[in-house]
Image 1 (cartoon, rainbow, N blue to C red):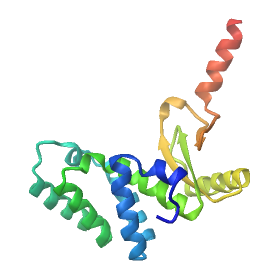
Image 2: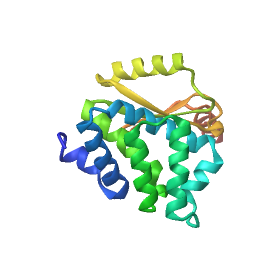
Image 3: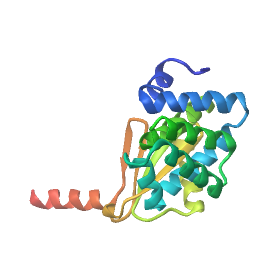
Length: 188
């Protein structure tokens, strides 16, 4: 890898990191990093939206051949690129589909490190619009001086506002945290 050592070593540690690293190497050799990243984003969205797809990746009772057929059909229906489709097939054959979420996150981290980007994990009470994400990315870029990729999570429990994790820095602007602060101040 071009960015070996330090951060890159931490990203590729563990099973998910090794698979993601291998996929990244193949994508780089094929000049397909962007298409693989987009396909993996589609898969990640599919895992979040489809209980059936999530169950397929987590079920220990689905055999290798059945899992391979199922992921091939899913890949075709989602319009995934050929490298990602083959990657999912290998995961099915090796019974590693349960680790897919971690592999997708590790792949994103490797691509970000390769491009000198920073990834911010943003939690909001409601889904953010494309315009809000663009404004947030611009604001964070000004703060850190580098391009920022945003990974979003929706958690209604924060009530409103945002929680942003940027590396080891946590910016908690959630209404829940503010209310808890007020409650502590009132106690005395």
